[in-house]
Each structure stands twice: as C-alpha cells, then as structure tokens.
Length: 102
Length: 172
Image (cartoon, rainbow over all chains, first blue to last red; front, top):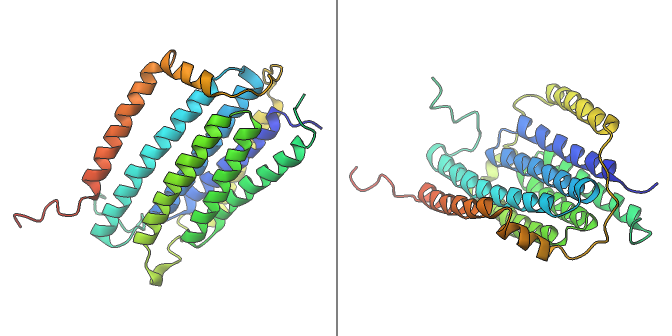
C-alpha cells in the first residue's frame, strides 16, 4: 500500500488532537503555548501534504513558512507575557491570575 | 510513484516519532518532559516535510522551531520553574471530559478525511524548492512577505517592552 495524502492527514489529525488536549487540560501557561505549537505544526503538515499531493507548486510551502514566522512571533510575545505574569504573581498557573475577573 | 522503495517504512517511523512525542507533550505531568517531547514532535514533523519534498521548509523548521522556539520555551520553563512545584501542570478541565471532546472532534475530522474525495495530481519529481519559494515570496506573496517583517519588528519591540523589569520603579 503506497503512502498517500490520507496518511499525512491522519498524522496531522493526531498531532492536532494532542495539541487540543494539551491546550484544554493545562493550567501551566507554557504548557498551553506548547499545545498551540502542536496545533500549528499539524496545520503545517496539512499545508505541505496538500501542496505535494493535491495542488502542486509552491503556494502551500510559502504559507507554511508564514505559519512558522507567526509561530516564532507568537512564542516570543507569549513567553514574554508569561515571564511578566511570573514576576507579578510568582506563578504561571492561568487559574491563579484572575485579577482582571469582573 | 515514489523515488525509493522504503518510503513507507520511513514514513511510519517518522509518523510514530511525531505522534508519540505529541502524546508525550499532552500527557506528561512534568513540564520539562513536555518540552523535550515537543522536540521529538518538531523533528518528526521536519522529517515528514522532507518526505513531502519540502526541503527548505524542513530546514527552516529545524532552525526556527528546534533552534529558536524550543530553546526559548526551555528558558521560560527554567526561569519560572521552582523545585517545589515541578508538577504545576495539573488538570483544569479534567482528563475524561477532555478526552470526550477530543474523541468527538477527532471522529468528525477523521470522517471528513475518510469520505472526502481529495483532488489529486500526479507526483512531481522532487526538486530543490528554494528557487520556487524565493520567486513566490518576491512576486505573488510580496505583500505578506513585507507584512511579515513588520509583524516580526512589532513582536521584537513588544517582547523587549514586556520583559523590561524597571517599568514603574523610578517615581514610587
């Protein structure tokens, strides 16, 4: 059985579900960011699989590069915010930082 | 169809590395273990990118994700890490309700993958992609490319402003 588009989509789906689980269950802010990275990676696998098997050309690869760029920006800002929260609250538990709750 | 005969073996190996490491990220109670498992996922995904004939994206994945983002995350873990609460990654929603959500979402998406008749093209011979990507970035995608530089500059300045310590010290 040759490896086709569906195989890559299934791998991407599994990675996405793990990322969703990570985002939903973590209370650690860095853990949530890791889940977001997993989800972005599964999106990238999808982009490249469709670029290879379904579209041809380079459009999917360019979009994957933009996703990686945005993930880098998101990680830098997100971790700076996490460190700021840690300096203020001395914890990065997202349920303990509820000063803004109305 | 594929260039080499052991393509399926390599695919299943890389897919297993990526998915099992992702499971490690999701299910590990120790945030440091999660960070190192994330490296396995990123490297496995980079290998899959190579199998998908995306050599440039694979190298960028290793350089930026593994060399940049992951190191940044490890720094953040170490800086916010106290020995007393190694297991800060408790469950907020509860494991079983979340697994139910995951199962429902996965069933829908898996069914969509299974029943859709995807448009397929004949596989092109894998060639270096750098020329095509560079050409695309400076013609069709020149506006997003320039916007990307603005976004990165904004992220750079924002991270510097956010992580400065003595913001409100002087007049207090």
